Image 1 (cartoon, rainbow, N blue to C red):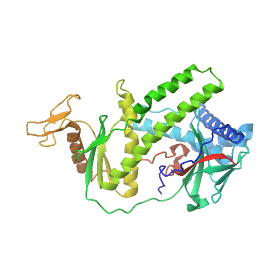
Image 2: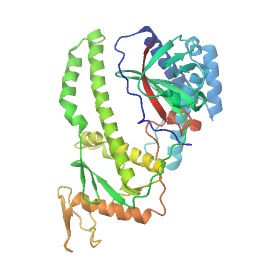
Image 3: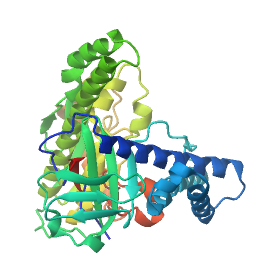
Image 4: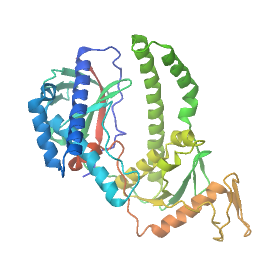
Length: 405
């Protein structure tokens, strides 16, 4: 089963800016979910051969023995335990495959969400009211957004996640649906070579401009950071300055995601086969001179959305090993080593192309040779891998800003 991607979200018409009592109760619920997850992780560290069922039993004992854990809905406590087990299972998987870093599970310090299953909440889709019925007595919350929740049955909504962000609280509804587009074949193929000068250069020679959202907002961020530094610690003014800084960072993050989603959708819709570089961004971002620019480009998010759209649109997305793609001549196949500062590829066979254009052609050719052995894979954006193996196919179909009723 597939699910609607997280790019179909509710845009809030207004944001909550005052510390309402109900939203403080939501924060208490989030902290309780964090406590349960960390307690399950400590139980696994101290025990031997702890299984997923052992964590379930441990969450039950936490609700019985810890007063504030008993206030949280039983399914939300189970979901917090599943998050701990998801981190543990990823650690085991990476250790078996010999991948580094293995990603040993870490305790959460500042959790931002709490997740409910199909109980502990009620949805009035007609009036856009969400009622949380657990022991925290949060009560009725008003949903702010434009997405019509009447399109989905109550039994199709498998989980509800309350998320705290810098500009307010959001309700994400995770719906188990099958999503597929029947598109006519275009007969076109494309190879993509990502870079910093241009966001990518394709095999036809087109260069997509690099938006550089973080670089454009860097001066404003520096000013806000100085304002935070001038405020007295633990003061209300400092908290307000931190909130302003967080909202600016959140805007940059959303701009980067919006750019990646729209661009990936356009590329996949216009081509039947998309070949791209299989880059290890985690290692590349360790560069002292290029780490900020690489992080600002958002290559990993762009690749994730290409793989997602390719899967739901029936297209083929092929990751290609980027080794020597910029050193091999796309005309004669001869390898000519060139420094990174040389931006034109000139070969004795007469080829004279931009370096990235030449690499994109090689990526496309390699991808077409691999097409018979490749399969379109890739997780959806914001896939809730922390909710356990049984729910990894789910993704938030809608997101709404919430405010007290």
